[in-house]
Amino acid sequence: MTTIEIRDIEANGMRFRTRMAGDEGGEPVMLLHGFPETSHMWEPFIPQLVEAGYRCVSPDQRGYSPGARPEGKESYATENLASDVVAIADAVGFPQKFHLVGHDWGAGVGWRVVQLYPERLASWTSLSIPHPGSYAAGYSDPDQQERGQYIQFFQEPGAAEAAFAENDWALLKSVWAQSPPEEVEEYLSVFTEPGAMTATLNWYRAAFGGGQGLGGEFTVETPTLTIWGNQDQAVGRSTTLKHNDFINGYNRWVELDAGHWLVQERLDDVSREVLDHLRKHPAK
Image (cartoon, rainbow, N blue to C red):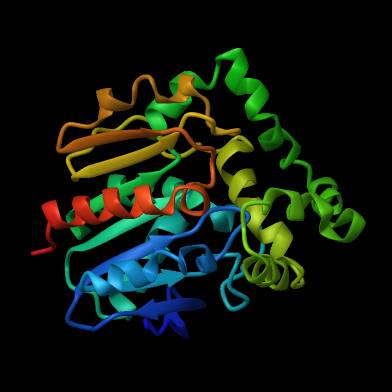
């Protein structure tokens, strides 16, 4: 049975609550969660990675960890979130190259790491989010604009926070319909902490409130696996159409008959694809 340890890791002048598992000699893998989740989302997947010989590190990212919750939306710009990833990797003793896997906003941050720190990555896996240039190109599609209306609502300081808290956090609980009870309990314990809801919404406010989005157009040489669910409620097909145009290196695109929450909905498929990807591109 895999033991998952929870530790506070000091990095970038902050303290990140981090799930860790696996032998320190194993190839390093960092797992980045999305919104509204925490590193707990990876608990079903981490044992499979560990059994395959990998060392896993999964932080509650900036805004989610109580010791990493700076004020102001500017603190949550994607380049800052990406720098956290590299700082945490260094703090836990990862070698020069490591594998990176991200879902939802964790994938958004991961694309930024690919852009800014490609020399640090052995491989990159994005769950649910295509290349930012493709996402931006497809965002003008009416269907995608309808899917993305929540992003505009999240720009309203105070209003979004109040909506989430209404009726004993009913809106958040509806988002977690695919999660088991212990995961919902974990998530609630984080999002009900003082300042947590604003801090996590600041990711959207920094990126889409007149900011730079997810990083714009750039080409990718890092070996890349992208898994997308064709029933995704938030990320429609129009955002995926130019994805391949931005990937110059190894590129595998997997479309599943699934929604947005791929780990909860299609764990076996995700595990198989990710493990195959990691084995093809070992960290050296």
